Length: 396
Ligand code: PLP
Ligand code: TYF
Image 1 (tube, protein in one colour):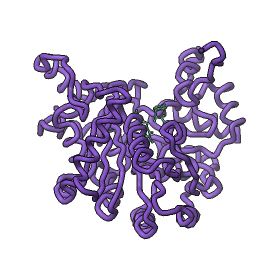
Image 2 (cartoon, protein in one colour):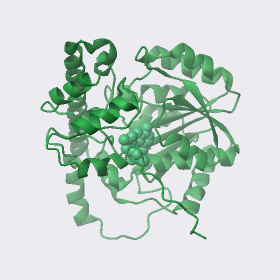
Image 3 (spheres, helix red, strand yellow):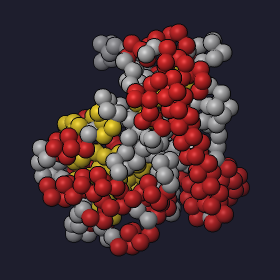
């Protein structure tokens, strides 16, 4: 049965970690996998999460199964953060939600729900998009098409091209959008552009699927949720995959949610029970630990305030790093190529480098990032920015 299987290459993003670890150059820099890091290069447990953990150790008391929909209170906390209490209230009866194994689990479950409701639906993805999107939607039985998004030549969003391409979608097609902090480009739509996209989606009877993996990393928790809230408010149907990996630092705990709006009969119940069925067919119920921590933080006023504060510190740090790198490259005469890095948001920027230039920077300078030129800005430090800027300028 298995003898014909061939070994596969490593994941283009996660595979870089092993190469980085094996490199003995003391000046090596890891700008690969998108995780937050301190100036010392650590990805710490957040203070509020550690406090919730300390509490849970004493109070959890059982490891018995949780419900297929997840840890008690978790989806309410995720809804409160993403849609916000007033909208959740206004949409009562129209929202189904389930806890998922990370944002990846939410994507897979969402695509499977779409394929169950409307088999073979076409999903429109941005050019470029996160490397996991198309494999995941294909594995769920869906097809993909690409809309124009980021123009490398101008290092900005091609909004007219995007709208023109989306006009080619047919009613019922799914439009996959990065809710904030676009991965890999770091380029987000502005408010007016979001309004135009949401209006077009409404006019054409399309369905938005918003992927939110970085709430709080662009401008703040509320501002970052603005576009997804407008989509859920204005459109009859919408899907949201939500990840707690970055903004709660829960990466390995696999903590996320899938949230779906419909206006059908018994919508909330129909959505949630169908999602629970799909979860059951895949893994029955999600892991509890990360969701228990997140829920504990969200339900405790002091822990929540400390979490908001620490997330703000993380956001400010990444934004400072991106401006410092952009300034450094601009001073070297490459403002046209790399100035946009300073204006973008979230963890990532797509550097205007060829795969050959990326390979040279890796081989000669031990700076690691994927061949498409995406850097994890959070992997920069005040100390390594001069080295990285020199290396980039050196291959121009
Ligand atoms: N979607 C995007 C755009 C991402 O960058 C990520 C990675 O962090 C995810 C979804 C899912 O992340 P996770 O499954 O680790 O929660
Ligand atoms: O894009 C990134 O680097 C993050 C982390 O299969 C990640 O989103 C990368 C690959 C993957 C899961 C998470």
